[in-house]
Length: 177
Image (cartoon, rainbow, N blue to C red; front, side):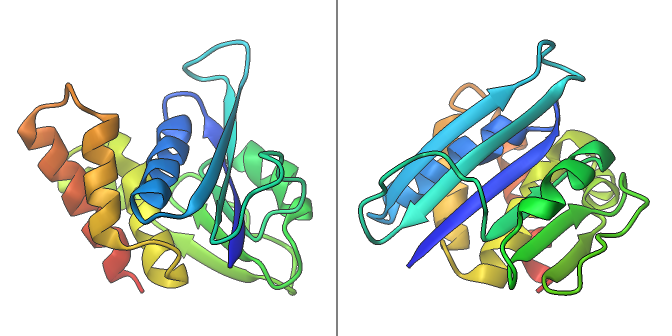
């Protein structure tokens, strides 16, 4: 089993953190992983994306040209990355911020009100966690409990309240599927 994932949006949406959490969770589950971030010139507000490969086999390259899975958090990323998704791939997108709809009919499209759910929980910046929860539930590539452990490793300086809120966002995302 090898899954190639691209996560994309703008800086400040937790794009790179999402990739780190997925990669770390994969390692916790004894899988082979790669993580390859890409930032725009500006951190917050600029473009950001990352590639994550999770596999039961050795991974030859961290470069993902044609992903199996896309997680798209903003409108410009939808236009840029939708054509790259493999036929039969899974396309998760943040319906709260993206008003257009993916145009392809050879992929599975999952519209998630990520920001709306995050705001409901009390903090808009955890929309990425909602998306990760949905991803692991829909694809079974990792366990939800492993993501919870991994986010604690990523955010070692976060308060226990923040870590608990992240867990709630992961759970809410997983409840969508």
